[in-house]
Image 1 (tube, rainbow, N blue to C red):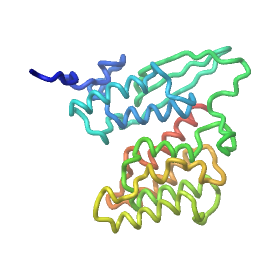
Image 2 (image 1 turned 90 degrees about the vertical axis):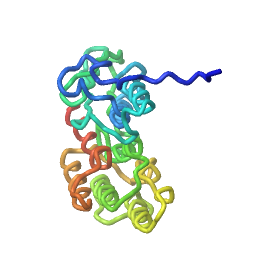
Image 3 (image 1 turned 60 degrees about the vertical axis):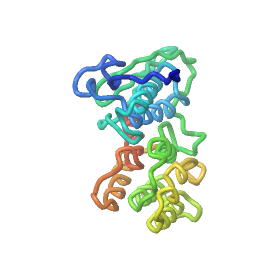
Amino acid sequence: MSQQQPEKIQEPIKYGDVFPVQGEIAGKPVAPKDAAMMQTAENSMLGHIQKGCAGAVMQSAAMKNESAGFVGHEEINAEAGVTIKETELPGKRIITESVGDEVIGQYSHAVPLSSTGPYSASQQGGSGGGITIGEALEATALTAGKKPVEWSDAAAIQAAEVRATGRTSIMPGGVAAAAQSAATLNARATREEDKTKLGDILANATAKLPSDKPATRRDAEGVTGAEMRNDPNLTTHPAGVAASVAAAARLNQTHK
């Protein structure tokens, strides 16, 4: 008597299977990190992950692809990044979601005419509308939360903290201090399970910053430079700290 097993897909679910896209991205399988990036962007702009939007579709496809062994948990195929653009119209706003240059979804949301928009950062200590550096750090806990903290991560986090707070020194008890301590201990740890992960450090980053600000392109360049300079291969992690700050800066620029 055979026990019924969950049905697995026979071929990977590609972007072209679930979205009206063409070009190179259409033939690529939807990967877990792609879905995480889109959901982070949706959460930052809409305040939650919208049911029926691209993030939920991508997550479903990515889970099936990973379960069937077509993609790894840390895999990312949307190398060009994801973008969410908002267009304000009387009584509603249009949300356009893209992977690279390919639009994968467009949705209309009714809003009061007095709406202040989804980018208000007043509750996060930000100095205006936009995704803050602290929020970008928290997004990294979603996209690369299981990655052990290395020196390059600590350097990027320190650069982000300096730009968010305007302070040039590391604050005791802050995210940068915690990241440096984690990187030091991880370098000595022999077992992977004993290492502190990015998610442990960045899950509540905004609460550990005395002040915060919307991420700009200059902030992204500074964080990227710090991460690259401290990486043995002079590269950045595709879903790490620099990538999250850069994504926030792009979204903020798009929203202007």
